Length: 275
Image (cartoon, rainbow, N blue to C red; front, side):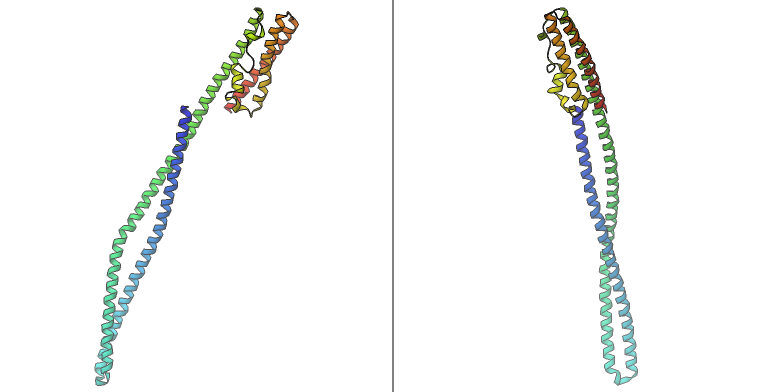
């Protein structure tokens, strides 16, 4: 049925949208984790830069100290010769440390300059991902609304179809009773009319979609009066053939009373379907 296929398509689309949302949430989680790693990396770069600056500052102080030591060694003459050598070595070492610290700072700056665009792109990508997630969420909500409307449309069409069927059943029922009166006038026997399992309602009840209503009280109560209508109508025809007018009258009255209950429970079934 077209409506069933449409409903299934909506459910499939909802499932796919949900899967996409879950996938985006997973990616978002990775982005969040990546951002944490990026922040950690940025922190490490800053610490390295700070350390390099501190090393440069300390080595500069050591260089100044070595110069002052060399000057002091010159003032004390020959006795400070050994001290002067140590001051020279100290100066060379501090300059080397400064050079290495400068190299580290240069490397750190190069890494930082290349890393900043990565960080910015990651943040930009995450922002774009959030926009996509928002669109997907809105789309999922719209699909849910459409699926709900499709379900309502399907229910309305099913109700209209069921209403048409039950109206036809009631018309058949009335025509069947009218046929009994015609057959009485013609003195026909009971074999000229069908049994309760052979009419449109009977086939629906025992063989068709009627079993879908099996759990309702109206469905269970419908069987007996429907069966009685057919039995009494046939018995009235049989009694008519032997001229038993009292029996004919009795069976016709029972048929009509049972018919009222048939119509009653058919209407209840239709109402239960609508609810």
